[in-house]
Image (cartoon, rainbow, N blue to C red; front, side, top):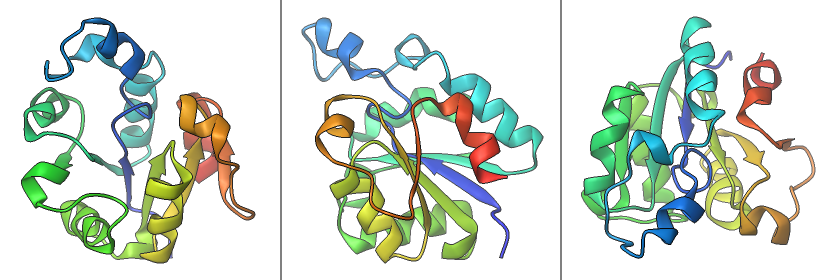
Length: 157
């Protein structure tokens, strides 16, 4: 079955948490300026290709607000009452974009929290290798790995 949606993890996948941490206020809501430089061009290209785009991660609900202007659907562990890697989180991801699990790609930086549980839930998983976790956890065999979101549209094609 062809993909109809892509859902991004937020921390280190879309948002550069290093810049966010430097403010000294970990509860400060994320803003567009916190996005990695490759995030918005990737989202635009995925939408141009007809894919629904979402963002969902282990975060406070307050972090959802700025994402609504950039993606079609947003979810947070706080609002859903469940955190990754729990299977119920990925059930929410599928409901968020209104597609069958095998039509949804989940893109994340952590193998333990993003890649392995997304695969177990029947989603397509893509490992973006950035941030500290990406260097500590090798990409599982058979999973696409990218170093930049610029690569994602062609990997999913």
